[in-house]
Amino acid sequence: MAKTKKMDEADFAKMVKEITAVAEMIRTHQDEKQSVLDDFEKEKKRYLSGKISKKAFNSSVKKVNKELSKLDSGIRSGIKKAEVLARRISGFSERQRPKMYSVKLTGINLRTAGKKKPKKKAAKKTRKKAKKKPKKKPKKKVPARATRKIKKKPKKKAPAKTKKKTISRNKAKKKPKKKAKKKARKKKRK
Image (tube, rainbow, N blue to C red):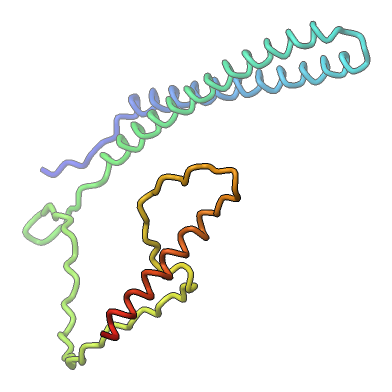
């Protein structure tokens, strides 16, 4: 004889009571937070009107911040509990899915809920496409100064200081180059 699934209403009612209790706790924390903020607004008005000192107002600010952080953590923990309970309830209700029965002249049969196979599509004939040549990336324009390679020259000792005018390093470097170029030209001519 075929039997259908039967939901355990007592267990489900317990879970519903738990989640409603958690929701009520979240709501009470939210109400407390609102009352703390309202009280702080009143105290701020008293401070601005000069009824309480800055020191007293500063101490109340610290107390209010502590109270707000406690309430926020309570709200967050309540939300986490509610999420856990909601998952438990959804798992419980998921297990209540009905069995698939079919009735025939021969009797009652249990059907398996298998996934439907997708229909196969007819294979399309495709033409072979010629391979496309990869596009060349455009070269970036680089200023002439950036393309020159700078050769590092070995450091030379600074010339000894004399009372006469000292030759700047740039001028001192340029003169030997000219002489070296002249010598190279003479060798080429020979």
